[in-house]
Length: 259
Ligand code: ADP
Ligand code: MG
Figure 1 (cartoon, rainbow, N blue to C red):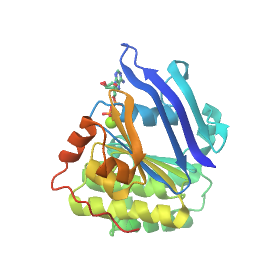
Figure 2 (cartoon, rainbow, N blue to C red):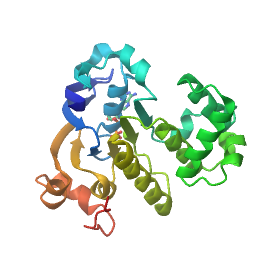
Figure 3 (cartoon, helix red, strand yellow):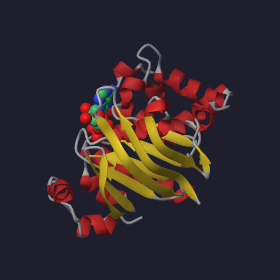
């Protein structure tokens, strides 16, 4: 069964800008699907639509999660636990006046992990899994005391905490330098391998998509203009726009991360 089935999703912002036009996607457990497009193509709007962050009256089409419509009520129940998201520039979503440890603790609390010791153990383990080795210091820090890349990794760790069934990721590694980026990508692949997490990744980076995806969708002006297996899109793109995205990757490598 599909984990997520999005059918003909359409959305216009108040100014009439058609940010999504008839976008359809299916994801099975354990699949990684990347949606690739230039800035402004509608990628973030798509994820916001799935998460219920757009006014539902203006959102056309259907979103089915594990065979049932993803109503706002269900979203609230499962968000963070079964469906997790890594936002673009995740730092903005942290409270600047609370230490990271407190915010991590509150997230765990909200999902039923109430024991302080248990919380600290989980948080440290997860931070170390994204190679934030000085986890004690990180937990004691306020967000502004960490670099953007570190805060991003904290957000990634938090999103992976409950081994979600579905992980939505919006340019999760764009702000990170290459070595960290690669580690995070390996971490995502491990999550998929060990827990069969389905991952819907949106990115402008065709190199990243080529590296980790089973399927790739290409978005332009709110439309999915091309969709296929990773090999179809990388080796036999049909659209010029897709070719341009491929050419934009510096020394594009055919090599794929073995997983
Ligand atoms: P991407 O994530 O691919 O860069 P977005 O989904 O952010 O694209 O944006 C898609 C389109 O919708 C763009 O034309 C953008 O300018 C517009 N848009 C995004 N957010 C808003 C908003 N809050 N109000 C009006 N227009 C928006
Ligand atoms: Mg975006």
